[in-house]
Amino acid sequence: MPIERGSWKVVSGWPTLNQQLSRLVDVFTGSDRVATLPVAATGGVSLTWPHTLVEATTTAGAVALTLPSAPTVPGYRVEVVKLGANALTVNGETITAAACFIATPTVWRRLY
Image (tube, rainbow, N blue to C red; front, side):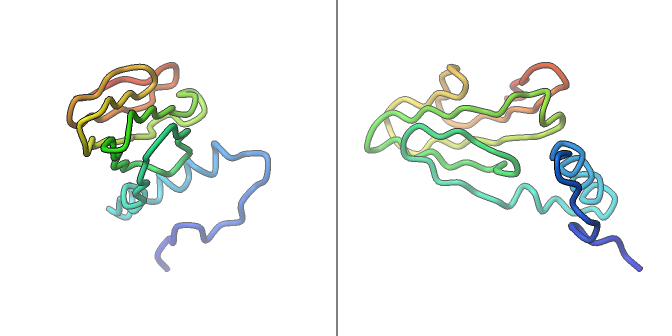
């Protein structure tokens, strides 16, 4: 019987463990379904798991994105694409076109 994402009972109070189990199943099954949850941002947005693809539209004004605390989502990857001419910042860092961030057990690291 194949392992299905979300087929186990969610343990309340253990959100990080549940997120890591979801990601582990994705890795073992060769699926990266987590990366298919886009968020359209047009202002200040605090991202939550599993929003991993963000299209930030800056045509109406500047957009500021805030990533969750890295220790709470280790391995969490966020890709950001800027659409428009105004400023885009992610955790205070200016993005000119596109960027990718990954959460380590202590901090966020920018991959590109």
